Amino acid sequence: MCGLVGALMLPSGLVLSANSLLNSTDGDSVDASDVVRIPSTPAALLAVVDAGGLLASLQMFALAPGGIGGTVVSIPVTSAAIVGEGETPRRLYDSYLAGGIAALTGDVEGLLNVTFATSAAVTAGDLAPLLASITNVTVEFDRPVKGVLGGVVTDVLSAGRQSITAEQVAKALAAIEPNAAEADRLPLLKSLWVGVGASQRNPQIDLTTTSTGVIAGDTTSAALGAPTIDMKGLIDRLLAGQVQVWQFAGTAVEQGDANPNGLDWYALDRAEIILVTASVVPSSVSSLLASINVQIDSPFNDAAITREAVLRFMSLGVNIVLIREVADPPQQATIAAIADVALESEVAGYASVLGAMEIHRQKVPVEGVDLRLTLGFDFENFVRANPADALISASTTTTTAGEQ
Image (cartoon, rainbow, N blue to C red):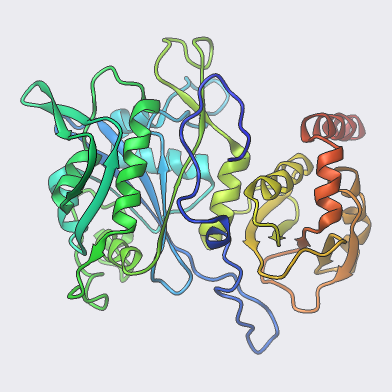
């Protein structure tokens, strides 16, 4: 969907339209000071392990503004973690193996630039009660879901269309097929979450009483007695509304310095990470760069165009903190609304990467946002005429020379 190129692509993409993911209406209320506040979008990290304690699946849950419904983001467990200079390269799978849920949470937060409200590692037996709000799940697989039972490889779920229970979903998420590449397993995991998102719900689940239980392995302040939402409460709220599913794409890392033993290893696309996190968990994203904070509003129902904007802003070294797809039709001009007139000359310089823009002063500022860019046909035309790779390379070279 994002036009990623690599030796091996892991399945990715939204189950629902990009218009649903990049929601344009939630959290747009203006307070008395005429400042739009980014809505609360807490995120949770759930690691599912097999009977031997090995990491089988990894998913981020993102609550929608308002606290009902949201997005399930499937993360390849063999994704490369971000390591410091001199550190041995490692995968998320290795992080959990070496340091448990605490080490895994730290590495995923570093990889996604997201702070989790709660995180936990669970077995299939732990997970089934967390999914108690679903009563019937319809899934369809093109191959069986395989796992190890009693030391023997067996079919956890058969191929084809079928109706399964929460317990079967949990067992499938905890299944590891020996010697199978994760690229083969991920379509099955996505199908599971698609089925869960469209499943029948238990109407007896009371959302006012689901944030009190703490499960084994929970590393959040809830586990220490603080009044915050726990994994059970967050999942119940997620499944009480419309659920979307995204699965990160990855490029296989060939054997070499970054993969010395030739393991099943994937590098995630940084632009896709930002596209997803700034869309579904903006309040949980950190501003790490000593630069301005940017919001991207796209009237195009095309995630590829939005990703182009992300790529170009990445080359400029700015923080992308919020991405929305707006309902209004595209206009010809790309509008750059700035919070401070002192930014006008800096933003005008972005035209070499973003194309022509009209620079305005924000009438209603967004809290924590310095620049709000609304994409127009001028941007779309500029993107088609100026491929990102060559343009960004030239811009980076110029910037580096200027800093020297």
